[in-house]
Length: 185
Image (cartoon, rainbow, N blue to C red; front, side, top):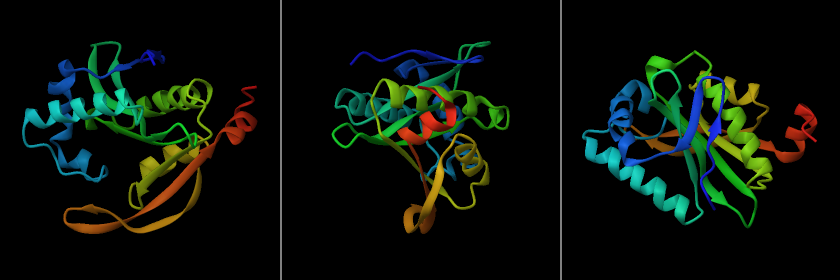
């Protein structure tokens, strides 16, 4: 499958490349960003290259698809968004995203998630998109609910963060709900 370029008003959503490692390290080395991702901050640029290599491996193995969110004004990678745990047989995936703190609360992830959801249902023929979010991550929970996701429940001690198990909220959006709510027949 050829990687599909997507576009929003302010973003290009394109395949992540090794050239994005510096921009990725800039924000994934910041604990304020990583505390809600279930990962420790990056300590070296080498770790950015490893993440990018793993994303490429998952894409080539049809286990994931992650876009670089590139700001149109400066051609800078400001975050990533896409499908993790892609399961084409069962037509489901888990959506995930990260964003440079300097671009928070400006609607960039809202723009991107709309295009990625549409692509998942229409091009990948996914039936169910899920998300797991730390309970205290109110901004992400609000974004997902605004995007049509429904809360399903809590997974207890699901992710280890800062050496402690943490609960997460599970949310999902089904294809049939997406088409009913958005009239995208």
